[in-house]
Image 1: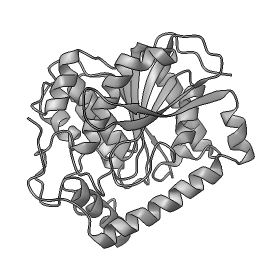
Image 2 (image 1 turned 120 degrees about the vertical axis):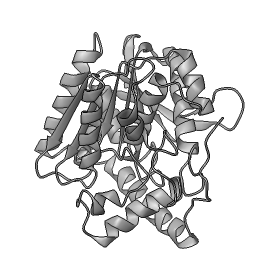
Image 3 (image 1 turned 30 degrees about the vertical axis):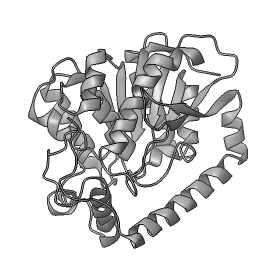
Image 4 (image 1 turned 60 degrees about the horizontal axis):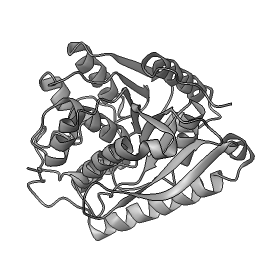
Length: 331
């Protein structure tokens, strides 16, 4: 049985208009960014197969892009990338740069779209992510990927979905698509949750308990995220795949969790969730690395000109080399 929010989450018409405006700006900047000299250099030697439909069984298909090195030999590890944007904005097209970076680390990257909460509240996004993961497991070999070595990565809301996928692969849950994933026996090699929000419920904790958010604008954004995805009256833990951190803090998995890497800037308003993930994984005696970068804000690692971003990617490389055999970087 698939859990549904108890009330009707969603944004007002003004809220949807605001998200559409923000989304349009981000898409425009990302599109222009592709053509800058440094971006052109980074994309050299990377090919993209765009807008492939993914589905398992019937139902409407979502789309993904495959990024891989030109002329690569078959057998590179697979990486499923899930974009952020508060579940409400952005797309695979706005996050092309991160997909390229993971190709450079040695992966065939499957960069996905999923239904956004402006029109499709929970569990649409996680159901799409589960479908994408199962599709990559079944179809990734067609694009030269070794799906026996499969990493899941995402940032912000995408970090939530990446963690929820790791949880769904390790916990026997009642949520229908998650249970189907668990029953496949798929065991990811690792997962990466960058600057993640790992509990969508009770977002007021960030300013009432953690005192990480003092400005009203950020508070409104966080409340809008919760309202659109699960509703403001959702009880903590009522939807485990929206609050995967609470499940990790609450009980042991039914089979081993994949090794985790979580990273954040120390000025990121979500940093507390990364620290809680580290504590929860340690309590479960499951491998987890935490890297917190001094002076950095949300999603700093997406800015390749920053020294701290380069250090972050070096830390990811070191983590992945530990857990993904035969990983070879692209030139």
